[in-house]
Amino acid sequence: MFTGIVEEIGTVKNIRTQQSVRTLDIACHKILEDMQIGDSISVNGACLTVVNFQDTYFTVQVIKGTEDKTYLSQIKQHDEVNLERAMAGNGRFGGHFVLGHVDQKGVVSHINETPNSRIVTIKAPDTIIKQMVKQGSITVDGVSLTVFDLHSNSFDIHLIPETRRSTILSSKKIGDNVHLETDVLFKYVETILNRNNSELTVDKLKAFGF
Image (cartoon, rainbow, N blue to C red; front, top):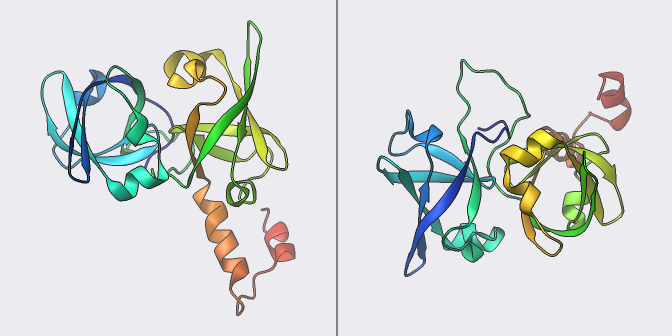
């Protein structure tokens, strides 16, 4: 479980591919402080397992199933990535519940930049759009963000200066892929509503404050 609050920007140091497994060495500093083999690390929003670590980097492996739903197969040496350790039980919860299970890939389709803001439009599959609401939560490349505006086949995010400084989203260009994960709470509600024997209705949810 993650919060979508990026702790550090890491750099891909080395890439090795053997059969259906792609191994990434990622250089970083902060998240190595209490790292253990087997830890879960969010790399651009994808939950990966630490298989090795040294003083200046850690190693994760990407299997074929993960590559199919992500753009991790396109990551190159020297690329920067968003990093977050799994949420600590005694820590503050600053973002929203993020599982690190990428749902789909989106594509940056438009960028409106001013000195103080950056509004990014992301084209997304219909299955993603249906699980979003305006001013709801969305995870983009592992970053917990608010849906600034919602369209028929895309949505807007508003990147404040701090988000631009502390994540790789400031370097995204039109045509770039991003990892998308919708709010898990919405998924639970959608599943319950779709069950034929459910007594829960939209009206009841509104009455409960949803």
